[in-house]
Length: 374
Image (cartoon, rainbow, N blue to C red; front, side):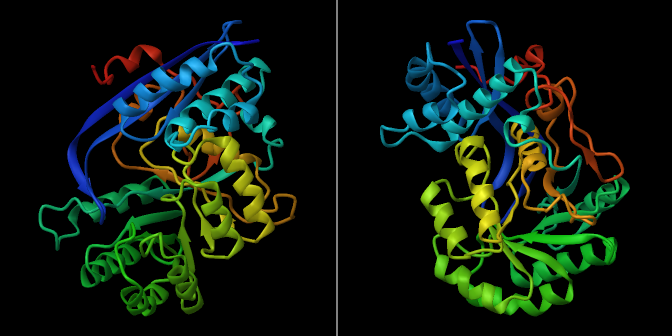
């Protein structure tokens, strides 16, 4: 079997109501889908990360010519071989790598988790993520409260909200969310690198009182020493990793216990070839492995497959811990329109799909409605 074609589709959707985290205002949802087809007609799909027109152009002009004619089953050979020249964005590699894993699983007619060690869990507990700042009045919590009520209606058992909008405003918003969800729902918070060390220390008593499960990306990610010092002071977990793309950076963060929870983004950090290695490394150093998933179409189903296969939660125990996975609940019609069988949690739980490949089928007819024209 040989690779016969590599196609990329930059897609985008304009939000009806923009929302913001501490770092940027989101007015669109955009990504790049990647389709790799073999000479036997088997196709695999992946999702890249980064500015879609640029990423798609790089895939077509640079990566595609180096993939045509190659054996798609040689996953690690291709992953390392394509990066022998410096400067290849990991986000583009992520789309290629995810598509190759999907292709191989489909060629072998097995779910992707079978290639990753086999299924270790049948049920995943998704945690609702979103809860951005999208109020007309920045001191209001009207839209935040509505989002929380919807998450509770859908029976999510944990949620992660955005902070980083100023200490007092954050405290007000977090307190209101805890009032709404009670003590029976886990609460995580994500600052998107908004704060400095001292502000994080000042927030510790409030976060402790609110029984926060973890504080995510509290400070600029470049300061590993700051993260290690914060871990010593915080009685809750510190999480980060979505801003890391380099393998050695992840190795250092895990080996040196920079965080309690490491969060690689499958698409942004180079795909499954990269992330499955990190999952094993995290297990060895007793660091919780939680893939970052936001605004995606196919990276989420791929993360489900990986999460189902890893053993960090000791699934063989009589009373295994819940297997958490980030679940984007913000508006994104592309995530449902472009997939004929989108994954949907039921009563706050997701049963791992048993279909071939990444477990969902791409609706190619829908791509044209969102395609970014050259």
